[in-house]
Image (tube, one colour):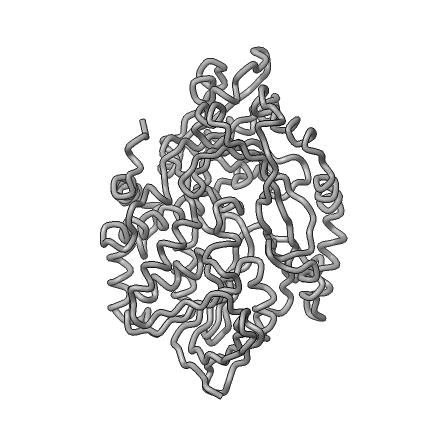
Length: 497
């Protein structure tokens, strides 16, 4: 049996694997890197623009990234961390554009206002408190706030159209927000990697098994989906960046660190409008507050996106219950992931989140008329015939074992890595793609420690990402320099007022 030996095996051809592969090849062009993808195309699952990955999440408008503490104060720590991490993504993309490895940045990233909008006394008070807490920090100093109907009509005319002038409303906006087509970005990153002679892309190949050998290498069995023939790849390092498919692959690895992890799959659907008369009247991402009991991925928003170069207006996503871990997965995915070490956490989460389950089941049976009725809270003149329903992809929220309740449901992303640094997996969902560069830097720091101890890799990373090793949360002068350069290099100043 022929065994192909490689330095790095990337499982999944999404933005995470593409980002990690690009970083590693720039750090050491002599590395042999193989990327394996189950589907016939790159970026066709979580990284596709319709599958929830079409926004540069920066904490500007997503209200679920700030929470009120028990004492009534506002916790903005997550918003600050996400904002700083997204700026790191912009730094890396800027470097790639400057050095000719990412052409035509307007094909994957464009400037657009990030706005929040709420109504009702309680929600207005929340948004005002959120604004006051965020605006005081240099990361968010450009944020604007208003409760004035006339001002809000200028910011978001479609949302304010025919709104009751006596209704208590409030909004915030940040003009230098972005819209990112992570599908296009991933294609560009993979194309850039093909310029390295030691990189190989294998589409329509499925990982069937993996085992670690005494020399610490991983022997990964891969089946060609067309010929059904299998081959083995021996890799010094394996990254599982397969979106919802990462958990089953992590379980196949059998590393002790995978014990206790489970997944809570959630699907979603968009209402999409491509009527140019409507689309042309809304150029922003307007986020509201999620209904009580709803998962974070279902925060309602009226969202302008560029999808494969064409503008569209999306509303949703409407969350729903599913047992699939991937959009093109199996209904048996959830049940196949059950293990003796995660059964207790899974059952305890199911017990403690009955309201969430009921909410998801109810959402699954909503009619088109009901969904458009929700849309009309944002856009009063919405017509049913202008909007069609489309899948928003799958998300697998993390379930972890814990001593108190037996298990807890986590909304976020997490890296699970083997103690010896030979394997890592990325689990979870939002903010996901937007913080891909920071997440993959964390993988490199954890799994390539010996290389990172040398001056060469640190110097190269500092050249690619000027803020590397420093804190944008704390260094206001550095943030100003970095943000100005990012916006200029990526062409994000052309519509920002």
